[in-house]
Image (tube, rainbow, N blue to C red; front, side):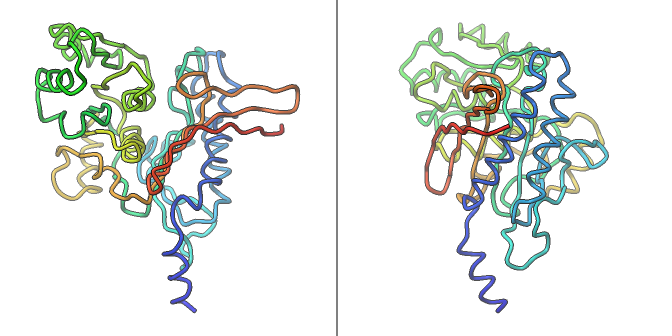
Length: 328
């Protein structure tokens, strides 16, 4: 009997749980949407976390937060290492790691700005980077730049490589950078090459997806953002066969010490896309809260809510945008 259960589990894949993961992001997005424009990003985030956790409690899997918003004492966040699902420890359960941000762009919800979404990535246990909630230096672009750009190369090399492969002048390149003081030097160097710098407040997952999208006018993402979003992005771009690299940046010694306990080897190493998410049996789902790359939550009459999501099934190389109607 045990052998049969193991056989059943190994014939199941992460994408078999897609409907549950979609329910989690949709529920979080709807909960956060009630706070749009009210100036309270913390309340919006708390609502998204509670809604997502309530769904995860009933998902039939043995899940774990591999990387997320914070540590166990940082409640109400989905904390790193938190067990998820209704089949903890059961032999026939899918053992899955989750990289999650119940509300990406918290400040954008508070101010009704674009690209806020509820987002997650899922993959078999041990195949997503398990690390503290620290920063990550990132670089990404379209498929044409796969193997051509790298954090180990200088800005000049990456710009020249992008120009050559995309057949553009540097003045035609659109590079997204988060508008933060930590990027002053990066922005200064990009200006020296006459690059068109697209500054954003938050939302580097959407920016990286735009950079990978041939229909978008964005060519690259550069700069430092949050590490959980980096792992989520790596999963999505694995499915789109687009480049992504990251390097952990530690906020304090506490994060560095936790990283040393969680990661084998050099914690300051370069992480390639397929090391951050090392399995094709993985999935990315993002549900819009505010309008942006994905449409936000909308009311349809008094009793129905319309939600929009982007799904990337890495195993099946399936990339789709879907719309769901939910009854209040």
